[in-house]
Amino acid sequence: MKKPYIGQIVHYQSYGTPGGEYPSVCRAAIVTDVDTYQHGPTEDHWVGHVNLAVLNPEGMFFNRGVHQDQDECRGGTWHLAHP
Ligand SMILES: [Zn+2]
Figure 1 (cartoon, rainbow, N blue to C red):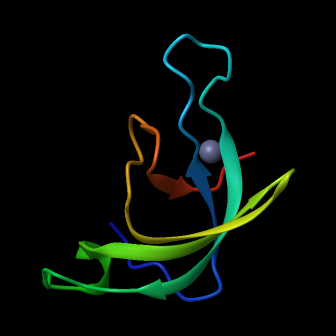
Figure 2 (tube, rainbow, N blue to C red):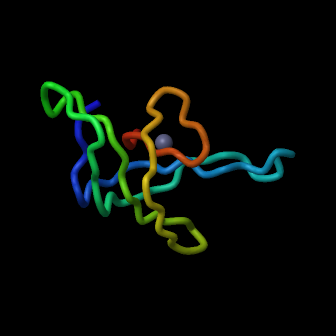
């Protein structure tokens, strides 16, 4: 994965409720910090977490140590923004 940068806008995947009353949806989020726990050969091989400021329609919250999940977009992860 390409290393994200502080200030980048990404998507945070919300947790849905188990019964499906609230589905898991994309929320806009701003990267507030980036860490690296494994160094790849280049910046394109970044492995790590980000801290996020998540912008919900009802308000903001802050989250630390969020993993990227670009393929399955599981709840509680982030992915690159898409239309
Ligand atoms: Zn998304």
